[in-house]
Length: 176
Image (cartoon, rainbow, N blue to C red; front, side):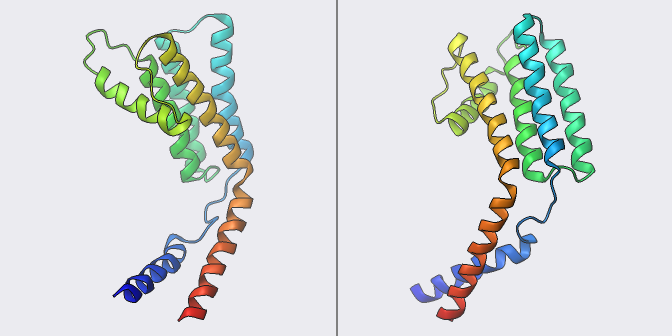
């Protein structure tokens, strides 16, 4: 039974790349991805330095970033991974600044912020006050950097994945 389970696992591992279209199936224009990242960073840096902002200004900026990301995705300039992670950053920004005077949405917002902070920083979310705001801002900055690294390492990742898939295929042929 153990051999059959192992054989099935090997078959699944070998089939996944073929079914998924293989690594690198979607081209990415790094300049476009970097411009999207830079726009978020530059805008919020300018707001912090100038001391201006407000919910309306932040929401307008985030909506513009999302429109640009959708256009880039539709044009095939960014891939699904980049789009999903970038969209998540924008959603976190909206959640972080969303007014909720009656506290109706606080549990849901806190759950998402807690998950984001834990996944990006590995820390437990502080929950409220300046420390929590700083944590979320730090996690957003880290995730923007992670997106930059993702763009910088696409070719390396594709090569490693191809090598890994070939290695596993070779091992399966030897064992089969």
